[in-house]
Length: 123
Image 1 (cartoon, rainbow, N blue to C red):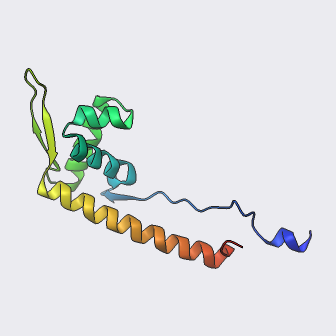
Image 2 (image 1 turned 90 degrees about the vertical axis):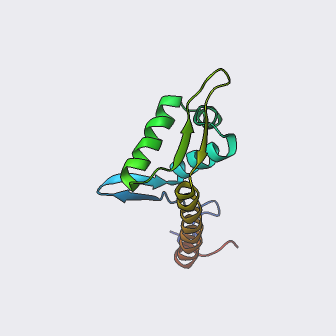
Image 3 (image 1 turned 45 degrees about the vertical axis):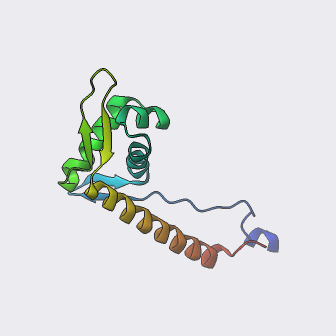
């Protein structure tokens, strides 16, 4: 083993998945926050699902799981008619999304610091 073997490869990177649970059930995660953001952006669960390249059914189920776990309505749904339905985040949905994003950003920063302490920064 040479001295260069003690240094990690320059391409070594850290990644962390992050989610919140209520009684062992996923309530919010990076992916689920992305779903909420897509609903807010598009105004539609169906359009958000298409944007994320997932089925409408999967988006609907994950949204229902989040609302059940958190015990609050995150998205106000308007049933479709001729022009289709619409969806928008409730005040609680906006609040949970904003808080999760702040928390995830702080966690990422902390993880990056810990990684740099353990493996060194870029040379």
